[in-house]
Image (tube, rainbow, N blue to C red; front, top):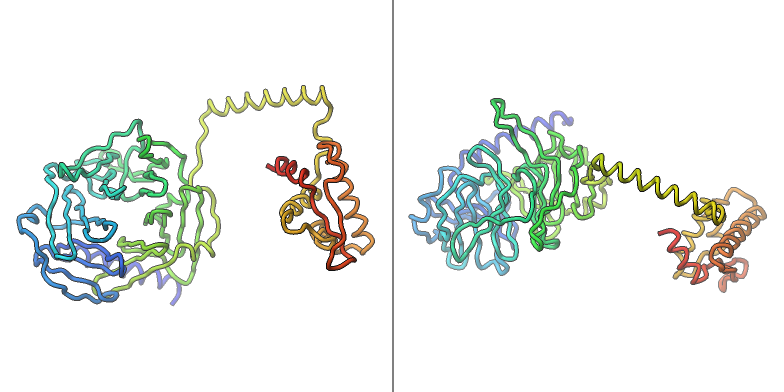
Length: 446
């Protein structure tokens, strides 16, 4: 089957799965953390079902729930879920309603714990848990996208707004790079979709990437997101707590916002497509398909990274014109200072190392604590393998002598590269850096 036929088949399956999802019964869904298999509660029949293997389900029994607790659930809904540390309780939030439910697996008891009255403001929001507290960021409602950050107050049984100290992204929703990092204790947001309120309702993406630091309650704009990631054909994004994963048919983007790096994993033998039902356990990401047909896919991020190519920075800061002017002034001042320095004390570049000398010095620094380099290894660093034995020795000695002369001139170190005879092979010489020279060179190459 050629690539085009594969793509059409995947597209057909994706559309058919979407139709099935839209037609299914009202269900609260989650993934069991221990088994990575799905579970669901049918709110109409009160049945609790468990996936025993991919696509195969069994009824575990009835759920204990007050029917009045479910009366405000809409005809069609989606939920998020949060496991507690010991998995004794699972919390569900219903998108667009603000409703919060608590499920106790040991007693199979489901109850609504919120007293939310206002609703309809957070469809497609970003739910997350921070230090045992439920949060929701942004979403859609009342004919516009928002950037509001809210937290659920268990004591008051209501959602409360989190008030930042400064302005952050214009909108936050499910279409962008959004997620909470428990390690950094920050919430990342960027590339969410916004739309104008004119007759065409044209949509566009916010290019800026932000982080919200919970410690100082401030947003920081990190820069503009790499244009390749904003392409229309690569919009499925998942945050696993460390990396953003972006599906794009025959390739997968793995994005590290802390290191500001994008890696791309390519595989022309398969298509990377999703059903927007994900789960992370450790380093593994699970991607689930239909309830009946199964189709579970999973992969290790670390394993993919081993065979991925570095693409470039995730975001870059755009420098305003005023900053360019300031940089130009600083460069002019530095050039003037440098000219004065040259005039007073002579040519500061005299005695600096040429490329071959720097290459040898870096190799010696790398082997400083490992016994240094023997004469053959020095020849390899200087690429002397095509020369005769006598020429190799002559070039090697000349390079080392020049380095020692320059180190004497600049740092007053008379013998920066020390030479001794190998204890294993008397025909070979061993070259090592003087300890003081090593420290000075670390500063030079900084």
